[in-house]
Image (cartoon, rainbow, N blue to C red; front, side):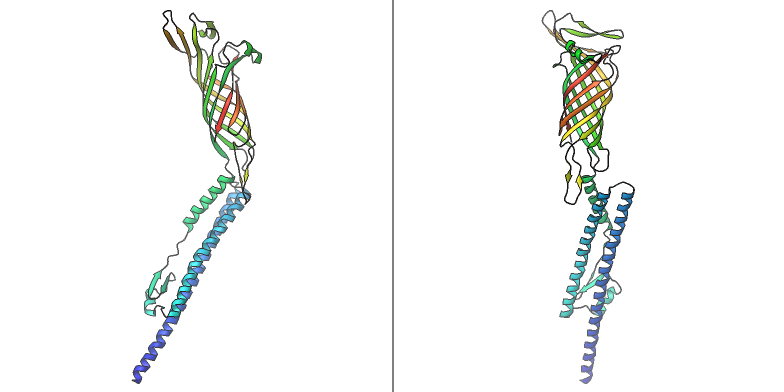
Length: 368
């Protein structure tokens, strides 16, 4: 009987010692994991700050943007440490509770994962914890954060869809007084322009000066007065009276243009609470001054009249009518938000061997 009691006492002592060793090992593991988590986050934060400083030195980002990015990633890693360490602290609380209830795993059970700091035990169960390096997630978060900040504060180029329409006419010898004697109907001669532009800020930080450039297609229509038409006579194009009574005499030329303007955009920028500034465009008064260069894609003359039998005739004449293929000139616009008054003037003559130049005035829409 005494032997049995002695064996029981020794067994209880051994089990108590085993449980104590098991508890201590689990505490050490949790402590190591907390240390690993903290070091990983600090190292990742340090690496990202170095990358931001490199971008600042190379001029890729501004000083304000670099400070904003550093604040963003510092806050992010602080949240990561708080979350991951909090999970380990909850495991420690469970471990203490199991210790109190006598549910710590035995040494034999622990030997299955002996030396593995990424395992922990609750009751008689052994769990393996994989500490995932969150660099991939951090890279994506950093990229999204960086892009978000850049888009809000440093977007230098925007795009616009452009549509313009108005009236056309010509000046002779660059004299505005020649409009009074023009052979073309002023309000019935129209132009239409359709295109796409890019608007780039000159400075990295928000400002009001931009370079605007793009491509557009232009339809110019000139309607003649008093039953007249264009007649090609060798190297000259003349305006002559037509034999039939015309209801329509229209010369249309289509060209592809490459406009370029300096634009002053007085839109008020938006400032965020953290000091970031968003460059806002097409939200205020705008003035654009510049010009264009292009080339003609085709020319046609449309004639409509009734013949001797009263039959309606529609005639289309395909010819270049001695028009200059290459075209260039000056243009400007002044407006508010997306709508502006638009004027353009050709510097080279409309027809060869003449001093006749096209002038246009109308409305223009620049839609972001």
